[in-house]
Amino acid sequence: MLGKKENALVYVVGSVGYTALELLWRGYTSWTMTATGGVCFGLLYRLSRKISHLRLWKQCLAGGGVITMVELSAGLMFNRLLKMKVWDYSNQPFHFKGQICLLYSALWCLLCLPVMVLCRRLRRRFEG
Image 1 (tube, rainbow, N blue to C red):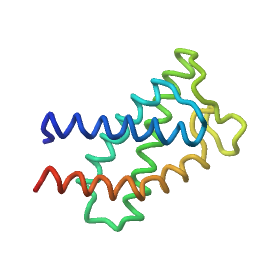
Image 2: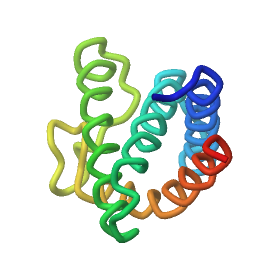
Image 3: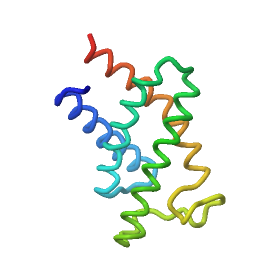
């Protein structure tokens, strides 16, 4: 079980990190992506604890799957239900309702390379 400080740090790292990444990639972001980044990193941090015995490429595949599912959930809520139009992958091949697509799922797996290493370092900091 994670402590309050650990939970807070993990959420902030994910929120700030993803916001910075999106600003670099697209040049703009949304508060919804800041919140989603915190949630994603929190899930990846917990996942990394459970699958640390796996090879890094397998951890990255699992992490990419987690991010894709969070992206789908956030997209259905923010883009479809609330009509916020944060992103739309309809012009990408192999998309699902414009909310997720194969290209970005692959990119999420690649992003998990440094993310899983960061998770390991943060865990060591808290576990001693």
